[in-house]
Amino acid sequence: MPSTLRMQRINERMREELSEMVVMEISDPRLLGISITDVRVDREFTYADIYVSAVEGHERAPEILEGLTHASGFLRKTLADRIELRIFPRLRFHWDPTPEKADHIEKLLASLRSSENPPAAIGSENTSTDQPDTPEDIDQQIRQLFQTANSYLIVSHIRPDGDAVGSLLGLGLALQEAGKTVQMVLADGVPGSFKQLPGAAQIVRKAQPGFEIAIVLDASDLLRTGGVLNDRVPDLNIDHHITNLNFARINFVAPEVEATSAILAENLPAWGLQVTEPVAKALLTGVVSDTIGFRTSNVRSHTLRLAADLMDKGANLSELYNRALIRRSYEAARFWGKGLERLEREKRLVWTTLTLADRQKSSYPGNDDADLVNILSSIDDSDVCVIFVEQKNNHVKVSWRAQVGWDVSQLALGFGGGGHPAASGADIPGTLDEVQAKVLAATRQYIQLGQAKKNDKIHQETAILVSEGENK
Image 1 (cartoon, one colour):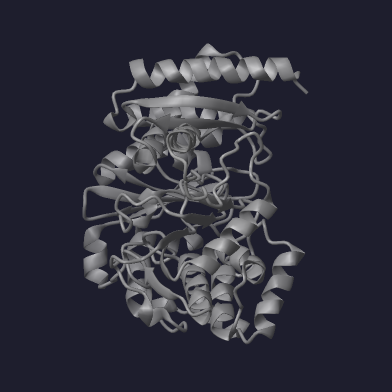
Image 2: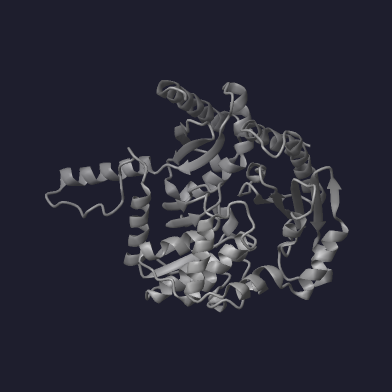
């Protein structure tokens, strides 16, 4: 283990280098006027948590974190060149509210000095940053959030899957059962496979003003919500993606959990909400979908017990499983056919494309791949599969799937996306040909780096490969 003094020196050196780089070497207007306030590298050198602030305050937090994430490949590569470490950690960016809190406290003290009447209480906000919030602290904050407010906006990510829909409905219906007013919003609407779920008809594509609390579920960054919140900083972020940017005021992020719906199923009672039959159906749908029917490598015995508990509350596993994973529309099957016709394989890499013309010819209504990527991931003798889905706004939706032992989340993060080690995605600007060339270049070289049991060295090289792929 490195000594405390050495860790302090590494943290400070990294902070100094990053501070200089964001000013001198990056021309992104989103990063103007920011400060790197702290860097904390864990002792295993897996992650470097980087804390940032800006003079304008938290209103700019989403765009700043988005800009830093976009530049993370370059930043990590440059840092690795300048700071000699055997293993170079992955970068994670967080908003640091400390300067704003210090200013707030100073104003309160000034008010005390200038007035005989004391100001109103600061409230429940914790202004001490000596210690991070414990899980118990976060549970208490979330419980209070659900008890004190009356109106909520809940959103999830674009091109929603079963976990996005299931977690949205699960929390939304539980809050409604508690007498709250809830807006449930998905920018791309509800996929046909999940329209039969209780409450699905309440989900709309645009938010209406007038809500007190904004909640984001199952999204690793605000960009993934499709702009539903505009410039609003969310009050609560609940997610299980390892690439989550901790962009809300309260962040409950558990990468070790199989699905965001599983987080809710386990914690709703502790947060003062009931898991009724409609809630159970929604949450079990999310768990079944994100584990691909309990087949992903992160499924534990606890996952099955959680599913059994939801079944005991009225959720029909066979029915939900069939709707989420087995049944497909005629249009989706035709769309699959277009992609399967273009299927290619190069050693242990498999990929295909779906164009806007394919979508039109097959009459498929969604903006996604109709879960064709899960078919690709089942192909023998492959380690990584990629699917490219052309979008209308000169973007391409890219999805990676990987076998056990591979981590494609950093590839996705380097291209502005995110996800899990075995399943990640990104929306990348450019034509289909341009994006495919960049992504395949980075993915090919990534596969060449090692075998299924990779060591931490591969995490260091991923950011370099992404940068090289972008320049091709």
